[in-house]
Amino acid sequence: MAEIVLSGHGLTKSFGSAVALAGVDLAVAPGEALAIMGPSGSGKSTLLHCLAGIMKPDQGEVRLLGQRIDTMGERQRSELRRTRFGFVFQFGQLLPELPAEENVALPLMLGGASRGKAVEAARRWFGPLGLAGMESRRPGELSGGQAQRVAIARALVTKPAVVFADEPTGALDQATGHDTMRLLVEATKHNHASLIVVTHDPNVARWCDRTVEVRDGRLLVPAAAGAPLPGREPNGGPYGGPARPYAANAGPAEPYGGDRPVAGPGRGADTQDFPVVRP
Ligand SMILES: Nc1ncnc2c1ncn2[C@@H]1O[C@H](COP(=O)(O)OP(=O)(O)OP(=O)(O)O)[C@@H](O)[C@H]1O
Image (cartoon, rainbow, N blue to C red; front, top):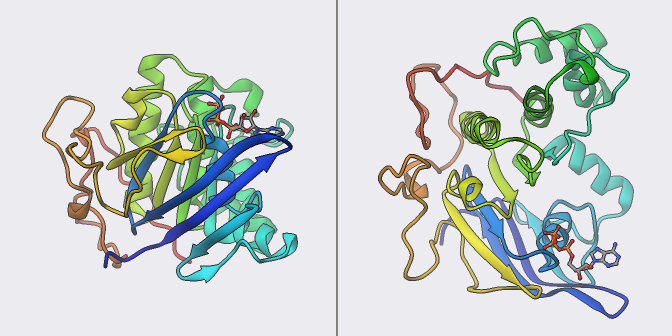
């Protein structure tokens, strides 16, 4: 059986008479990038929120590395979200009054790191993400794409096991969205984190190793970690390159020696070396 980082089993969730999830089974492998697609109102965000411990399912189980998280209390889940998960939302959700570097440093400071150490760690992300010189800008002084790159740094700075992204390029033009997805996928893989992306956009999903589709609160095909939908190849790269089975990129995290190329769609000569965060 494939190694699993995060799994949901038999997930249901209703809001009054609206059934958002009607029994979803889903598992994500280490280092795997998974896209969740489906029409508006099909239950994508609810699924992401249940998997991320933001919301408790009505029924079913969510496990992180085998440990149930859906039964945890709000405090424990909140701690888990801060330490084991990273989040990138459509509109960055950066704190407008803080400089970019402090937005990135914040999860570390909330975990008890000194401001100096946290900001030092945060600054390491700015060059690789094409944000050099923008460390002290406030979010209002950044473009939408730059703000999303700050959000990517903030999501990864704590070395999460899983990064959740809900329409991460939804507010960006196509070219900026393309760059943002490239950076999100590459930086996440570089740090051996799994990535779960909710999107309407097939161009976004193409960056991921695998896509599952949600309709009326159910997956069209129950999908195991690492398995492409039957009859479909794993996603090809955004340049229409060869299909790239996730297994080539996943596997147990290993210390990164700094010289191993990061396999990923569209990795080109311009790809930067991202910091590798240590737990
Ligand atoms: N907080 C809530 N209160 C009431 N109904 C909700 C709530 N959240 C979701 N729903 C309902 O649950 C269903 C699934 O919603 P969800 O947001 O998960 O879908 P989605 O696929 O993410 O949609 P979109 O692509 O439009 O964001 C919808 O019918 C929605 O109206």
